[in-house]
Image (cartoon, rainbow, N blue to C red; front, side, top):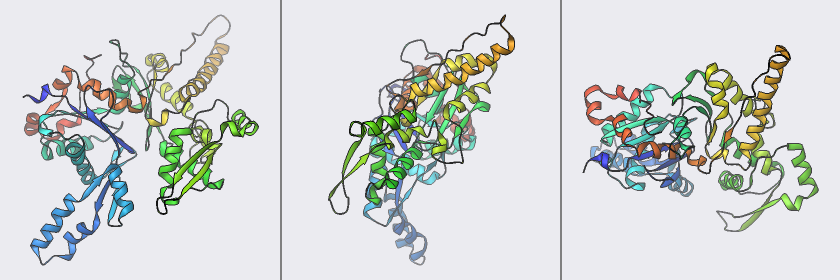
Length: 427
């Protein structure tokens, strides 16, 4: 049976979480933390302690290669044993540890998806502005280690843009606001091509929201077991946080009716098994507010997200700007806060309208400026937008013709992975 007749494997590796599954599905089969736990005692034993004994050294090396875990299992192993050290292969959207990445993919394919890589084409995703060398490394691992028949490496924002549409007509021009756990990018796309010179990134991510909520709870004296603090606060953030329209009004509302807005979290201490409770008050709206008022989080970066989006569009070619304002697509788990898209659209519209009014006053009463439509698209699958876009793309016949094949890799080498053609036959 030909590999092109089977569904392709779609793996979206993010800084915080990896989404994986098969093309044609609406949701990924598995969503796991992008982390690897390696047994360091076996690694060090294979390197140093048995230099004179070849067999013992070889055995320790083989065991070190086999004794590792990924995802939630890696986190639980590291908590249970000091022998396991955690390695996060991706930092700020870029792969920094290729050895750990290879191990991670190995477990994804064989342990989670339980498929033979030789029987499926693969679609991997990459962050914008990824170095071409990184694509070569990824291609080398996929073709050499896993012997896959074909590979396509797609830019995440392009997939997110495609995911916003389920109709036959899909406009591949827009701005993707991708807010992940470890990287936030604002990426303009025109006709399926990324406008690289206009990409903006900000140092505020989903992890920063978690850290800010954690800090606020700690300052207020709420007790959460330190060893479990980050994970608990992340769950609190995902369950209770929302975006407010006006921070001052929101404070007043909470002060007037605290019982209506304060939520209670009940947890179990991992060591003693005793239960504990904590109250979540202002933190509910203060967490997501750092995207719109970053000065409350730190003084290093103070430009609000709507202003960054506006700068991104203004630096794009002039003939694309109206279309970009009209189609702003959200992607990533940290855009899922309630009313996030409404606040973003309102604040961005204020910036644009102010500029249009200023231009009109300069031109005089005889010249009328056309209003600019600002639209922030909100859809239920934006948390998995990149993966879903990949699933849609990889389920078309054109996908298999756009892939780099094993035969091409053997003839031309890993350099073929540097470029991946954009095709719009599916749209």
